[in-house]
Amino acid sequence: IDGSRSKDEVFIEIDSILTQLQNNKQKGTNLVRGNGSVQEFSKESSWRGIPTRLNNIPHSREIRKYFYQDVLLATQRSINDGRTRLKVEINIPELNPEMDVYRIGTLMELVRVIALSFADDGKRVK
Image 1 (cartoon, rainbow, N blue to C red):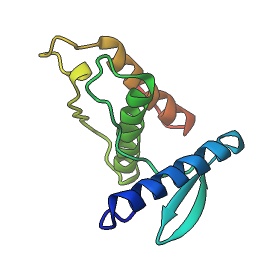
Image 2 (cartoon, one colour):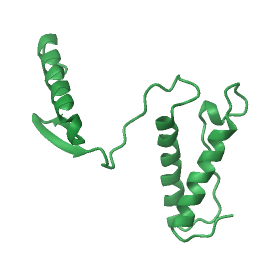
Image 3 (tube, helix red, strand yellow):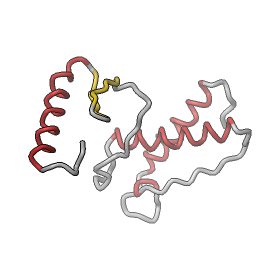
Image 4 (cartoon, helix red, strand yellow):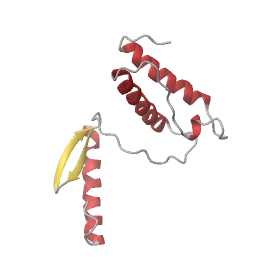
């Protein structure tokens, strides 16, 4: 969406995109408008956006899954680069023991995701 156009034109384009998204919701596809053309991509695509609504504590399952996947991809890249010892530092409120919203369940879920992923790949996990 080109924000340099008039407000009415921008709102009309947003409305048309939202209408297309609602029409395609049953199909399981999304439409993205880029460079004046409409492109389709499935929900299973590898594109990951920046999560929103991070002020809700505890985070929703989708937000936590986003962080878990981000940490998992980083650890997999490090292991594939030949590193055998890793230290993961993640600074979100639920994983910071100095904050009043610290949640040990989030840490355990993160460890489970990483351990099961490496075990599925045939690597030894302690």
